Amino acid sequence: MVTENVDVYTISGNSYNLSGVKNSLKETISFGKGFQYGGTFGCIVSDHLSLELGISYLKGKEYEEKFTQRFANYSNEYSQIYNSQMLRLMPVVKLSVGNAVKPYLKTGIVIGIGSKISVQETFNVRDQNNYAVYQLSEFELSGRISVGFVTGIGISLDTDEHWGFFSEINVITQSWAPARLSYTKFNVNGRDAMSDIPYNLKENVFVDTYSSSVDNSNIETSSEKLKKYFPFSSIGFNLGLFYKF
Image (cartoon, rainbow, N blue to C red; front, side, top):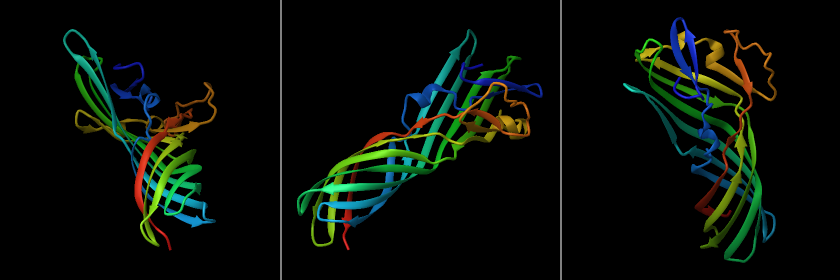
């Protein structure tokens, strides 16, 4: 076994490594870091109060973690590459002061939908018979809506009756608990081994409560695991232009 966070299963005489995102990387990073693209629709209630709905797509920063276990004549090598994405809806209340130049403060909620974390794993190890094994697998975490909070402070500048620019700093506090984990690729030494892996190992569902008496040995149904939360919080800088009808 390459690391204590990876389970090794013997299936039809062959050993397969499946981590199911048990690695500690998820606890030390935020998947909310990266680039966010989108736009905002607003309604002016008064000179200093407006309501806005922001729609944005988050493309998370790619993270990689590697682990090497060295022995006298060889080394076991393990790596995970994480990619994340999320579609965000952000209804907020915006308070501003001034006329052409307007400092403002806004606050509201963040609703994350279509969230996904994709993970690529590689194992370059020796099996129980001391044969070299290269395993490449990919799986996805998906499902469930995430709700968080957003607060921003910025300044807008009217250039004419309709157009203007804005810049702001915002803070998003958010976490996400996926509904399921699904393996989408499993190669061993260049061979497609997806058909070798039982369904209960390829498909996991996350639940609120879990009992050790639950039978996860039925290979025809998804295994149950305790719900996990992944951080999507971030501090960001936004720059753009706006148009007033």
